[in-house]
Length: 196
Image (cartoon, rainbow, N blue to C red; front, side):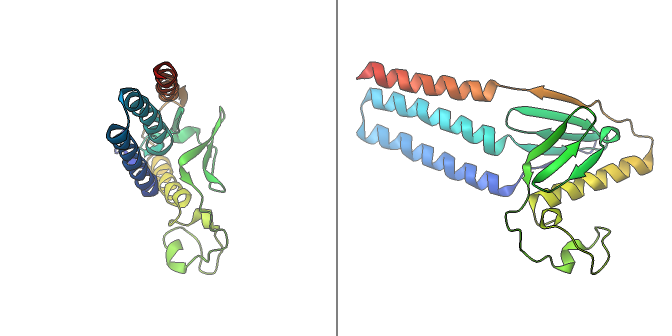
């Protein structure tokens, strides 16, 4: 895709950093207080937790391009051409409907603050008349609203130019991150059971 822009919430990266730090402290404490079995068990347990952190916090992202959008969720990757988009919504998360499937982006969930007032400066440039209403999920200050705004701008540009070919819409499933979690956890349990 041309002119690709990646969107990933900053909060996910902060939580991932905290998780990595806690895993490091967990492994360090086993080296400080435990024996070889405890160290091996804690290393593989930390690897399984780090894999979960990667799968559920770091991996989800959205790539906006001139020809379409790529939504990466923990186990799935959806490639959607702008020409195949039927509808976009932000009620619970950025949700895109095509004729083949409907996908919600893990990287662009709606705000949990349903009763927060929307300031008029937040709707500037969103084609909403002054005094018009907007859902909190559509606010550019929420993850779903920020992602939806980028998607709508790219889709409008695609429609206005008319000479950009749309990418093929597809879905790929990837179980490798989850399989790695299972293997690391099984090794941690087996090493702990065999060591005692």
